[in-house]
Amino acid sequence: MKVKIFENGPIALDTEDEVSVNLDGSTEKKAGPLFLCRCGQSSTKPFCDGTHRKVEFRAPGAELDVG
Ligand code: FES
Image 1 (cartoon, protein in one colour):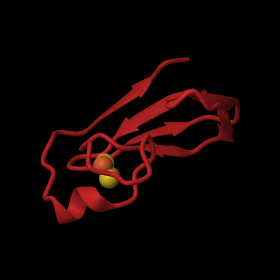
Image 2 (cartoon, protein in one colour):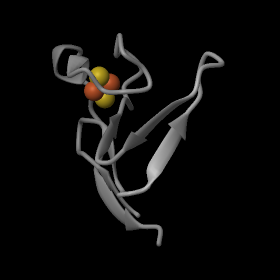
Image 3 (spheres, helix red, strand yellow):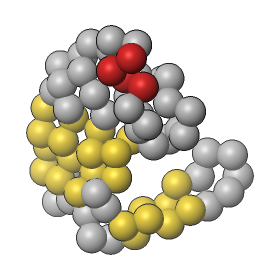
Image 4 (cartoon, helix red, strand yellow):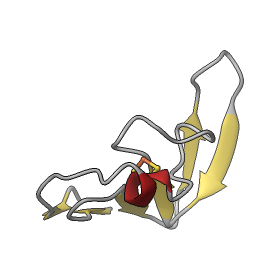
């Protein structure tokens, strides 16, 4: 799975596997790419809804290959 951390933006999980998301006790399975909020301001957590632009979130980017 590849993980791309966008500069000033979300974390993208690029996977063809289904990923379980479990924040409030519910389970949701999604196949990638998934864009996860990193700024903490999304109204659709854990997913990015673009609010990082509005709040001018700033953080460096990176890319990882986690196998
Ligand atoms: S990173 Fe996009 S809304 Fe938080």
